[in-house]
Image (cartoon, rainbow, N blue to C red):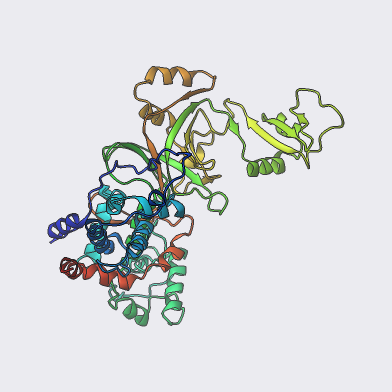
Length: 497
């Protein structure tokens, strides 16, 4: 049965015609100073073959975890089909695509369906999530645990098999912590207490936080298949730029605090990472970017908001930071500069009104460590070594101001630059700053609270930045289950057009 479902899934999954990483922007036509005609500037028509291909892609939306919106008739106007294509771009384009870029693609890129097909992920992990979505929605893999009648009261402090069943059942509704492993799964801890309290409140039951007869019976009632978490996982995958298995790339799973170096779909190097703190200012964003440079013995240009933290911690004067090893330059409104070395004409600059520029030179105490992996257009987010090693031993590794600290920077450097092993060794042994450029390697930082293990079993990860609730609320679980379950009928109706 599973084999047939996978075959059906792959039959309707479009094969990407572009490279596996959707990184390059479409080339623009050369600008001309001549007056351009309206024919060249205006939207291009969408021909019949393109319209049929767009409708065929729309028919696969349930398999991507999207409740279908109403498609146009085949003979609808060009403007209607452009709006239709624009909606499909909202589904399949990476999050970094601006609205302007999507509008331009819908108006000008022809065939538009080919543009969209190149954006449909074909990566084996994405396809596996699609297959799981299909199996769960059709009820083949629902796996709702049935909690048997315990021989004693199950409450906070209890250790029993029923506690593990209760934990699994509440997780099906997004309650509780997915990080509880091993024997602790069967222990009724405080985290499970709050999950139970929320579930009883939600279902109008007395908030006893005890697995009593009434609560157990209600928990054992059949619930509809839950596919919204799988749909969210698919959306988050589409939001980054990774589309296929081909080539070499870095994948950072933020929720698992792990980095993988991948070649042709196969992990060849993995390591622990430390990500941003769970605050709005420090949270590490999901993104895709080119690894532009590898900098050995980097200097650190301290971001403005971290400069404020240093001033609070070390003392609100340039000399206090200089004594701690930082280079500090002040600049006032008149353009006068105080770098702590050269004399300043006129009265001293006021640190409270002057502009601060703080730099940490290369060295053993530089927080970036020995190596920095610079990314393109990421607003100061990059990967780097660190002098703070203790957080790598922790299970939850949220310590940085947003950048990703890597456990094994030398191994990652050698993987990025396989032809320069001796050069890298020489540079790492020295103290001078050096820059090297990898060839066509992209880094993808993905936020996923649901993944699949190699056997296809669902693995839940901590929602470290508490993003799930708002995004899951936007997904109509029951409508999606109905759309996926009736997908065959939808295909038939499409063929009749």
